[in-house]
Length: 291
Image (cartoon, rainbow, N blue to C red):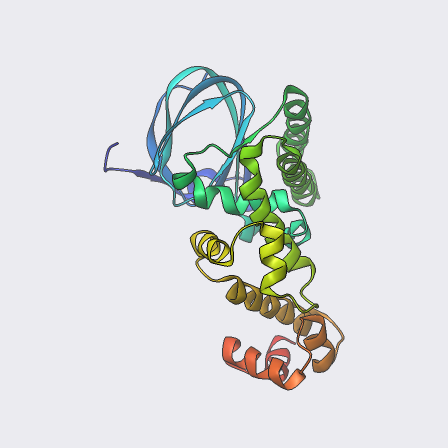
């Protein structure tokens, strides 16, 4: 693989009205191409044909129905393609302000969009999503709806296009969760742990509960967490609770004690200390600054 990797800039791709950071590219009979990176996410849906996916972590075979996410910093390209037709959905989640937290109770969302991309090198790309012909047809309809809105660019098209994108992400997440192949189970188990944590933040979550859901030892779970998220399960739980606390302090009409309870802290004083340690200011000061 060449050491010279071209980076595709966001300004080169999202050059339409207002630089809206969402675009759909259909590539018929995709040929081999050099390895590149980009400043945005790329969701790839393989409609037809076969090929080889070249990445920083190795080369992997592709076939009709494969779906995978390429994060911007990852170098990738294609080789040995045969009648390969694919769709690239190019987007910047942060810039679109997608309400992805509403997908957090879907284990398949975590597995497909957060876990699999991080474990791709060690997993050798074996646990990517593969759609049946029927599922592929449904996904194609979701994508076509995004294209209709982007092409027409009528008033409100940004909202509508994002709505269809969220529908696509939700559908693919459910497809991943419904995959019967046993190879998917380790990633799904970790996805179930992440979903459980995000759906039960107000409760007392023990390490024993997480280990039971994961179906793995505490040390294995901790190792997987660090590989995917760069932190321990406990540190991740604290981060999730702090994220919720920020949202509630900013948007909800709740006092500090109510915010603490909603984030899983039985003691509001302890919550205030943890929040200040994480944010650099007290919950009250944070709320004042955000108002």
